[in-house]
Structure formats: C-alpha cells, structure tokens
Image 1 (cartoon, rainbow, N blue to C red):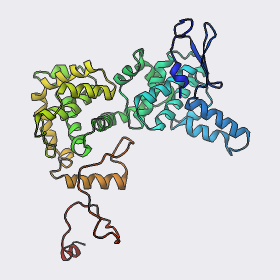
Image 2: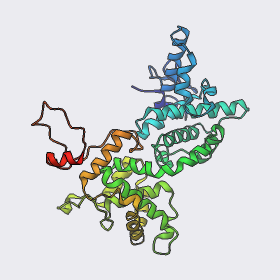
Image 3: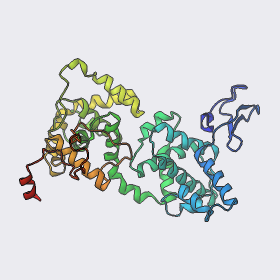
Length: 393
C-alpha cells in the first residue's frame, strides 16, 4: 500500500510543479500546493504519526495509566532528556524521510526507526526552544537514521546513504549538530571502535559467507590495511585516501576473492574454476546488495589488489597473535561448538540483530534414541566410551 513517503519530493503530475506535493497524514492524502489537485488518497500512515494518534486516543479513553509512558518508550529512547521532546512535531518531509531511509537500508530492526525518530525530535525541539530554524530536513533525517543504526550495532555508511538518496548534501555537519544537541558525542566516540567489526559482520552476512570462517580473518585484514597506510611500498599511500567503511569493503572482498590470502579454516576454491564468478561480477553484485556505487567499489578494489603484497605479511602476523589465533581453529567442529556456546549462553557474539546463519557443521543424529532425553552437551566430537566419560566427569 502506498504511503506518504512515496510522494516526498515528487512533481505534480497535473501542473508539472517541481517538488510541490504535500501530504496530509490524518486524511491520508497527497495534494499539489500549486494547483491544489489531490493526487492520491487512502495513503497509509507512517509509524510516528500512527503511534501518536493511537496513543492519544487511548489516553483520552483512559486506557493508559500513564499516557506519556508509551510515547516516551517509543520516542524518547536512551538519549538522556529526550523524553522532554517526545511531543515535538516533525515536519512531514522529515517524518517521511526517516521511514524512507530506514526501509531502503533493509535493516530490519524497528528499534533503529524508533531511535531515529527520537533523535530527530530531540534535535528539532532543542533548536526550537532556542529560536533556531531547522533546515536541511532530509540531511537531518539521514544523520538521525545513521546514528540510531550505529548505536544499535548495525551501521549504515554515508556512502550507502548517498546511493539511497543522491540529493544528500552535508550530512556530516548535521550529524555533528545532532550529537551536540543530544550530548551523545562522548558515547559515540567510545562506540567508534565497534563500527568496523559491526560493519564487517553485516557485509559477511550480506555475501552469505560463513561467519565462523570469515569474520575474524576479515577483521584482521581490516587492521592490516590500516597499519599498512604509513608503510613504504606500492599502494600504501593510496590506501590512506579511503575512509574506514571503504577499508572494510576492501577487507571483506579481498577475503572472498584473493587466493594469496590464506588462513587455517578458509574454504577451499571450487574444483571447477569456471564455477567461480569473476571478480568483476562479485564486485558488482556486492555493490548492488550493499547499496554502494559499483564504480567506486571497483576503484578501491584495484588499489587493494595492488597492495596485497604489502598487506599479506601484516595480515599473516596478525593471524598469529592470540586475539586471532584462538579464533582461527583448524577444525570446523571446534569452531561451531565455540560459536554455539557463545551465541546461546551469552547472546553477545553477533553484534547485529538478525536471523542466525546455518553452518555446515554436522549435527548430532537423533534417530536411535528418539524417546530418550537429549544430552546437554553441544560438542560435535565423537562420543567416548562410558568408562572414559565417567573419568572425565
């Protein structure tokens, strides 16, 4: 069903006026402000408007013990005094753009949209209190969504945002203004160290690669690329030109395509070389899935490929350090046990909230002992004789 967001920034189909469509969330209509023609009816409300209307009706009927509690839980978010701005009304363009950016990014955690709305309301309310105009509605919406996603461990790079909306201008300045208004600068600075690992996690899943085989090597590659920037050698100075998110792309795609980079449990190449798609095809497919410019991805990968002789020794050194050597296990069974225990017991392994990826590890058969209680052990190693098992206990 069409929403108000579908008509943001559209030209009137009747009089041709540019960017003249205004939406009425309450009536579900879109009309041209130039010729006053209603161009659409029965539009679906966006999340922020619908929630506000439903909560207002519930509060009026006495169904909410604390009428502002639900609104605060949805709109305030964990941003200090943001609850004070929960009733701030956003411009329809900003409300629509917040939802558009969230939907187009294909991050499926609704908490991102809720926190982005809370950030935007805090920023707008903060400026209105001080008699300051709120300009650049689209850029503020983009910065709010990016900040909310980054805080929840699902970062959206600026390069991706610019592909989603080619009209974006100075998003970085709007981001800094939001940080100043919400006092989130220190918190986001502390979270910056998680940006690259979380983005690597997202990209590895996007390529449908097994996390247990690729995530830590990709992180080691990313660190190797950063450490090679200042070294003398071919391609080192070119590496320093790219931003952090682009170096993450380098690391993930090099791990996927570069045969000179090896680690213990790296999947072997296919027996039939013709079954492997070309690098150009992989780069293009990744750019399309990640909402990146294909030309830019090809350019940075050309630089990365030239710098492999410089990156490889540093990568191999990092893979020997305790941080990465413990993760680079030789047997897939041990890796799956480690990942399963971490994921099920602590719920802290995967930084991105998403559906688990099935692994190729063999699962314990459950045919012969169908009526017996299932063992609590998650080990995938063969069972030992009873005498040995009793001694181990």
